[in-house]
Image 1 (spheres, rainbow, N blue to C red):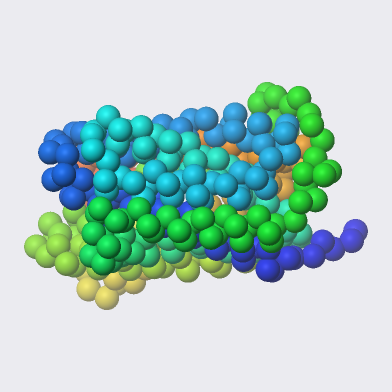
Image 2 (cartoon, rainbow, N blue to C red):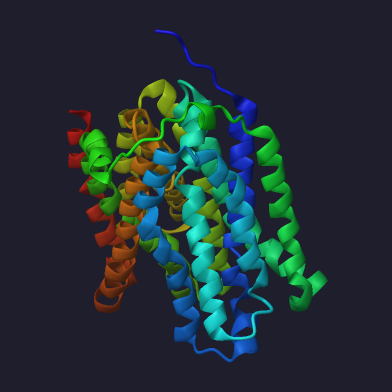
Length: 380
């Protein structure tokens, strides 16, 4: 069987566009205090902004189906950075809360328009090394979540809220670069089909069904560490700075995990890498909770590396399986992932209220072990 080439330049370009795109989606959180003051919002109103921005994720399968049937993956990836940057760059000067809701909703639609077809292009350009391609792609998004808030605060400090909209120029330049660089071959060869979500599901169900169980189990670990880590550390040490430092370490090792896991899965096998990550992660969480000193810090690093590293491996699995409807398949996977995270955050928070933070982390780790049986089903 002929080996398919890994197109490094194109994979890096799409990964870079992922970084630029997600930088803009990270603006809401750091600018929220200024938005609250400007519009005199309650905390509930402020929280609703994030929820409204995520609602369009429910349309992911339909966006994927549309991209497959019309052969528009390239155009969606080209336009989305600019379409996302426009509303996110205007949130600082929006005169009313109603208009703010409209802006973040449209930004959420653009986020979905980008994230559904982009992995499909990465998979195409990655040839036989889809894991490596997905690792580079996901690293772009992870880095954006670290750089984006810093960039937003710096831009406001230099430009002020009234001129903050000028930051959208970077997204426009990225879209122009993508237009002249990404090949148009998929548009010429794309078959204008009338596919369906059911057909897409049937094509990948032997992979998506076990991955759904894995995503739900992992979501509890993801929610407890990603949302409540800072609170846990602050209550243990009395220092918010330590809490922020712990989250930074967790995310930094997450970037390392994302960058390496997909590439390792090309050599060692997808399921083998998933197995070790899903076994080690809950053990590391338990040790992180119930140890002290250097061991606690080490387990925090291991947790970040393992919990966050599985996404590129699962994306590669989905794209290897979805031959006829790759965008729709990715949309189904992303919708399941979004639903699992949303569900887990609520449940984990409730457990923390009732049983305390230590027990919440322990229960989340035990739920994480439930991913292993689904992994065995995936092997079959």
